[in-house]
Image (tube, rainbow, N blue to C red):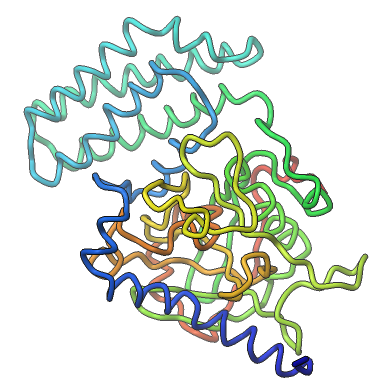
Length: 364
């Protein structure tokens, strides 16, 4: 039976508002049986760490360096100073003895920048050793964060070209061939986002394009649930997504999930439907402020302009045990202003959204 336009819109809104809830309830009700299908081990809950690991590079020494410093966060909680000291020593050995191997992956034009970064990282590691010896937790946290930010920048110098071609059926959509930083000014404060076109080029490209168009300026949040989601992107009027002024049609964005170990994303199918239950997405829902595309529950390719921030609550949605992974496209993370997310409510607004870095990587 064919539905009228208003019925279709009501059903679309219903699925959009209830689809994620249904998945969460499934997660909670499934309990142990669901856990057996999902990845084991400690999931990464830091969005910036996830973004570092998501860079499409293949350089073992720089990953070993990163791993040593990322590992410290787990041991700081338990004040395992001997293990932290071991991690710092490993990092010091890598940066001292494997500089040449690290630099092999950096193009000639960026060699000077990379060498400067390595020197600064080495200085950070020396400071980290002193802070560890003094068991100065705040200083360890601060210096580690500074060193990892530089390691992330160093790793980014190793990416030379966009690593794959988006399928032809989606080539008419905007693509972000790299990463962009977005600044949101809201009625409760400022938020910065990093969106990742390496893992979700179509979704990130659509978002950046809409930011450039001013689509989100003065737009209200439509849904805010504590410890769950904060959603926005429903434009005024009858439409539930973006109508492209060139085509006069609803711009539909496909489900887009990069799975760890794959060279390019899957399109139009959830990881569950693909039978990939125990595998993990490169961009998971394990970090507070994960940025994801909303869509009707029964239409993987029905997203458009509406997106949500995931307000990760480990007691409800434990990292690595989350059935949202692979069902919705995560395309970035909040990198500053996380405290603002918890303050925003329905009818608060994005006053303005602006691309502050990476606009040149958008292909339309």
